[in-house]
Length: 302
Image (cartoon, helix red, strand yellow):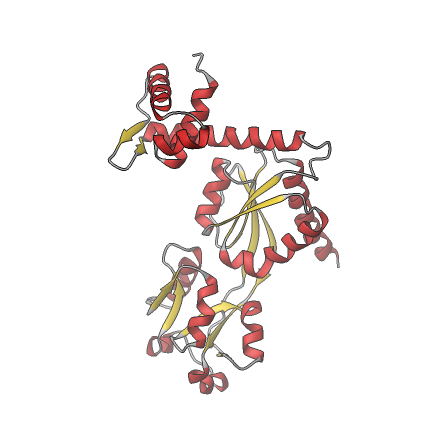
């Protein structure tokens, strides 16, 4: 099968924007030409790739499978182009990273700052993913690697390396200051409003399993999309919440919130890197990955 590569490039943009007109605009082409190209591609590979809708197009299952491979190939070509623009690959280029909210806030930001100071010409593309979304993005080749919080369901050929462990604590606003001198149980939490990340996150799954292990049901009063939203809600007395200790430390010291002792032990969680050894990295992405892993090795040797 000898398919014009240009068709795959056009397919990538149509699938990305789910719209022929938007793809044509990005490619500097006309909508009729884009439509003809996609019709030709469908005929040549004997598959229907799109379902036309009033708002644009949607990928068929066959189209989704093709997009997974084409998008990975496009990313590789762009990475190669960027790397070849400089002999070292560290003066120009870009790195695509998926990061869960917790991992970004308590670990990755410091590493990115250090890398950016050394290589200011490298563009950083940070995608705010949940842990499952980040793992899927690594698997499909959409990002170079991911830094996420556990639990993480990582299967071969992907690899997972623990970067740092962290502990979460139960906190509440000033209304709950009296609880700071007590010790409450998970069972007693049902008497208080609880704030938690959404059910689609691994953090929710982690606490759901923790509660189930004690025969309890996790039923938060407020669910939020990101970790950053939790502390402001706690400060404004909307409830108690489990947060990484490093994120809560400053607010606890300022007595804006209070840490509440818990009878049960909350297991530690990990920040980990997830990557695919079969996915070639640009020089810039390799440098950042190696810099992070080298820091881990140095800390282990201390």
